[in-house]
Length: 379
Image: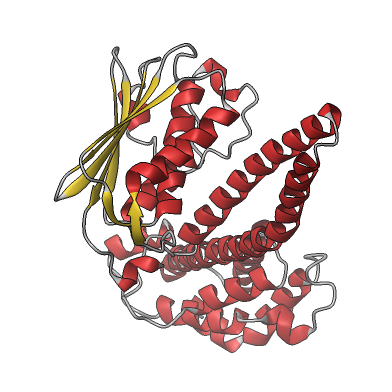
């Protein structure tokens, strides 16, 4: 009997073995009944049997064996993909998911070979069966990983949102203690709380922005009429307080009144300047140059320091990247998201950002159009 016919005729025997193995996948399977343990196994096996009975080119077989068989756009979710979603939501890990397929592959072939002698057609069936299982594994793993990533991102989003209230309480209380003028010891402790709270707030904001992008959302902006020169100057004043040992200079050319999200552009500038402080030569000036004309705003942050290799420049705006310079990690509590978030803010304003570096200086250049943002850019 050919393998496709065997799978359909002995479906219950195969499913019983699937169920027996699934019961061992603890703790996720501990309280599952037979229907949940079997899940979409029957549909997966029917799909495999149908595949075995369908003519296939050599090229198609190779693609399936490497999990690269394409699914037409708009096609319904496969049984393997649905099975992966339910296993992910049920608390199974990816090793357990793959183990199910390994057990299925072994049990089907063992049951079939125990009953029938091989001939040339049977050998081809074994090859085709393995290709089909490999494709099912690829489909399951792909959707399983996406499901886990989405669950993690939702959790991070909720966590970040819920952390904001207690953090704000800490910052407000610390500011109140400073205002009391209760002595140098209390004021010093409160100031440390304020600085630590600001660092925590920056980390939290970066995490939430990163999380939005991972959920397929743009950085949220709320444009309004602002004086960009004043907005950027205010941000640099705050940075100078936090880094009193570093010199940061601002030069502005032109009329910088326009429509942008001032808080977000402060965040962008802050991320770029902090990056320059972290990786630049400690005793050298960090220069911020802003040019505003009728068409666009050009913002450049320049610092002296080690040359950034071209290979690193190509991925410098990727998330979770941190520079290789030896001093970068000393006291560094960043998540490696600053430049990634800066790019997202520029993009949300319809602009762009680039980096260049040579023996003279490293420059991060931002270009923002001078036009009113559309509602779709508000996130």
